[in-house]
Length: 138
Image 1 (cartoon, rainbow, N blue to C red):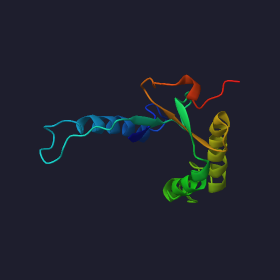
Image 2: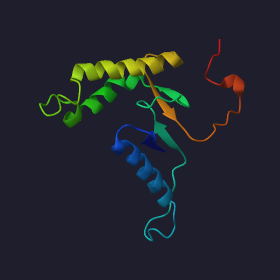
Image 3: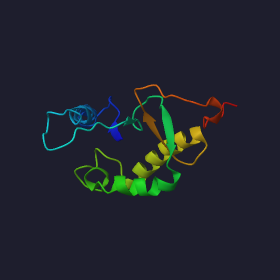
Image 4: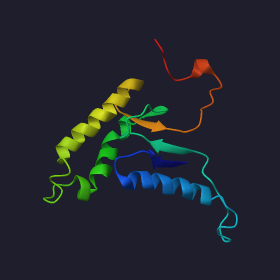
């Protein structure tokens, strides 16, 4: 499984990463690309859609991992740290925590948990037993 950024994004690094990641997944499955490595393609490609304004294909409960996720994100001090050069571009850590927490709470609320992470897949998802689907309509 590979998780890539959603294919439409404000920042060029994000959508280019998506393009390059998808191409790498395809190229990794070619037999003649590398004679020393067995070809392999991931079974699934998921797109992280947290920052995209799109309807997710599914939402994962991240309540147990939320603080760990926040600490990992905030370890990128060049983007989230308190620096003079980034002060005009990036909010401070408290504001970032508040914003990301609100987004995760929004998606968590949609599936009845504290924090959720949305993902998109391009393919249709097969459901073998509609009664066992983990959703409740009413």
